Image 1 (cartoon, helix red, strand yellow):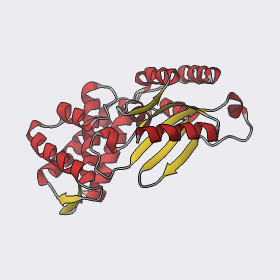
Image 2 (spheres, rainbow, N blue to C red):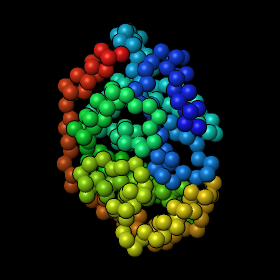
Image 3 (cartoon, helix red, strand yellow):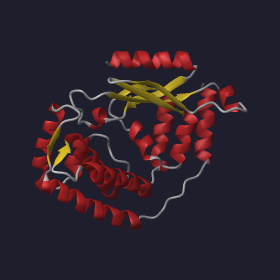
Image 4 (spheres, rainbow, N blue to C red):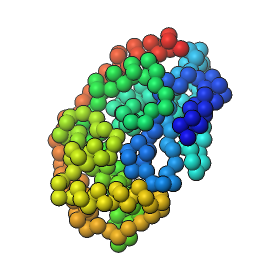
Length: 251
């Protein structure tokens, strides 16, 4: 599958006349809790020719290449990626921290080196808290719940706790977050849940785990209070603009 993904990246470059500087896995495979039938969520960042950024009619800043039962491939223009970096977009940080990388270049390292300077604790905390609350409200309130949705709440809660404790962007891998941030008393239950998730199809379900749900509700309240107390950071454009020009000159 890795060879097929890399072949698709080459096809994108040829069809769109772009240079892909970064590509990685972004979903459950990168998080470490993929089901046997999970698809591949491939994301990439690309640079166009310099003249494309000087057009009066702007070129679309997203490429959506393929979406089927196996592959989900899409990417962002470097201009969009850098604008999102200015806003401390947590999704960009996740892409760049993925443990499963399909394409990495010198330009990608320039971008990654700049990430810590633009990391916002407050924005990231609210991002993960919103993700946790949304999935908890939609999917974890019944007696039978979809297994994958437990991890769509657990992981953002642990990521937010990592941010509070470490003051930096969280790692992608779920088990790393569990080791560092989960209450010891819950680790056996989550370990069993993770083993079940890895052997159960995407639509698999299980009985609601009261102790886990109570933990999640408590943590959401704690994180919300902590996020309110964090100061709002301010970023600057100069360094990002310099990197953008550097990227174009290297194209």
